[in-house]
Amino acid sequence: MHQIHVSLFSERCAAFRITPLQYSLLSLLRDLGEADQTTLANAAALDRTTTTGILKRLAARGLITRATSPTDRRAQICRLTTEGEALHGAMEPAARSAHALTVAALTPSERRCLADLLSRVIADHDHRRGKADVV
Image 1 (spheres, helix red, strand yellow):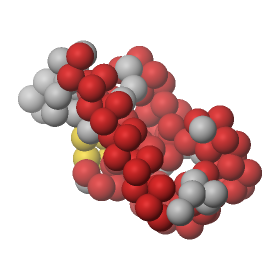
Image 2 (cartoon, one colour):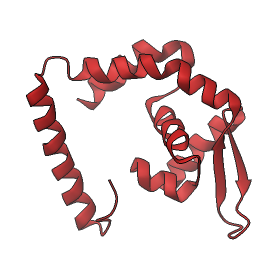
Image 3 (cartoon, one colour):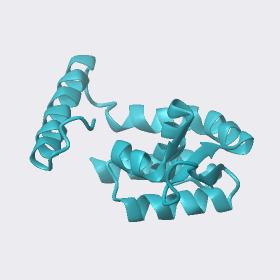
Image 4 (cartoon, one colour):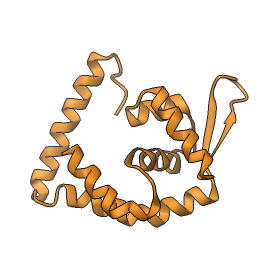
């Protein structure tokens, strides 16, 4: 299912030159306003090294800013730039289309069931890893 979604996302969003993981972090920053790399890593279920690499690439493209936290010099506070907000807004319909196509063969009831089952798998995984509040 993941491979199908990545393929559909790549088709629909190719013009934006953004990967699914980059889009996830842009979406989180849009929703949160700002966040440090650890918060973003936890929210996206990524390791910190991967998250930091993605954030560096987004910053190099001018889509986010990264600034040292005034309370923790090890933390980088990330925010969308105007360009990042515009890109996210422009690509959101294409990304949503990829998401919808991923589960297009399912009825609305089956989609809810799939979402419920996946939530249970994630919650169990997080619980076993000691992250009961993540999801």
